[in-house]
Amino acid sequence: MALSPRLELKQTQGLVMTPQLQQAIKLLQLSNIELEAYVAAEMERNPLLDWDDGNARDQRDDHPHADTDSATDRSPTATQGPEAGLDLREDAPAAGATDTLDTDYENLYDGDSGSDTAREPASQPSLTGESWANAGGEGRGGSFELREFNFDEMVGAEISLRDHLIEQLHLATGNPQHQLIGVQLIDSLDEAGYLREPLTELAARIGCTLPDAETVLEILQQFEPTGVFARDLVECLALQLRERNRCDPAMQALLDNLALLAQRDKDALIQLCGVDAEDLSDMIAELRALNPKPGLSFGGAPVQPIVPDVFVQRANDGSWKVELNNATLPRVLVNAQYCASIDTRHAKPEERQYISECLSNANWLVKSLAQRARTILKVSSEIVKQQHGFFEHGVSHLKPLNLRTVAEAIDMHESTVSRVTANKYVATSRGIYEMKYFFTASIASSRGGDAHSAESVRHQIKTLIDGEAPDKILSDDKLVALLRAQGIDIARRTVAKYREAMRIPSSVQRRREKRLSA
Image (cartoon, rainbow, N blue to C red):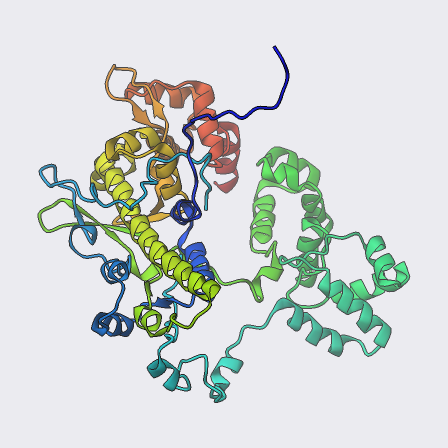
């Protein structure tokens, strides 16, 4: 066979991931915070996108040249009809079956899905002349007026740990060198108030001698809150006990054996500290009254509450109704009025191509957001149907469930269900749960009935341990026997694994703890 260059024609089939399709898949797995940031970035790049504040929609509908797609595909969060609240009764028709994009990406597998609430986005000024005329109004970014000074905000501002310590440093010493070293040590504290870096390394990094660093550290360890600048937990507790004049040899021996205290080894502690059981109980009570992380009481980051993506509420007829939390989703639309006002007759070819691409990307983003909302609603509705017993009776009636079961029921791919349930939360009458919470492994029944959910078994183990008597601590073998009596076929190592995952100590440690607290 001769080797020579030649032309060949082959016909093959392949899956092409267009940028729009990749965008739709990416939007599906984003959390609401990430989704808002992504939409805000798109709005900076695309002048035809605008926040839906209610007025822009009226302006768009009044324009005779408004784009047809943008007029029909409005805000994905302003869903009406069955999408606003699905009826989960058995005789109710399936909703969202025909709600698809021009390109179906629901059943497209794109590798492992990513895992990852948000506030209502502030209304942005549209690109119309009327909006620009009001750009200097209240709440607009184009205002040149200074914001009114609020004295209450300044007074009510929470002081940070660093500012609190710097203020004490200026009052404690007037030595400029000591003040410079003190500032460096303050900046080396972690959020709990501990000095984790060795003092020798700190002195070398600061450029001072070790005796000077130790002198400044002794001054800093007298600051409030008491216990800051400690190198470990023992020193932190010792600083607080010295302030109370309670760090005697017996208490120091207790501090030196905190490992035995964690193991609730009361007999060994009595022997090491040289005290009786009553005195040891008083000493332990004193330790519990101390603050092991004094720095956390200053300037901590505010706790961000979980904002649910979906609400599950009981309807008037007794069924369960699923609704999207529209307040957490960005409301965007295509600014058709601005698009129609652009005169492309005298524009250059690259300018006309840019406007065309912006219009196409804007329409696709609005469609993708609407499809994302429908998909989340469809998946969450199926989860509620599968876990009906949980919503009616609680965790003990949680059923085993996996991604494939939900995917087959709603005719989607498992990867799509995984993306939808990643870092999204459901608000129920029993609390707020992550969607992944409802997917649990199954444990066989010892009586040949339905399998049990792993989460319900963990709940049952915790219930048994919480109800045990102080003189009858349940061992893992006893827990296995009690669970098998309830029809749960489970091994001892599985009980131990679940117990450790819930941070429940062993029966020996629980017995010591109850004896210590008696």
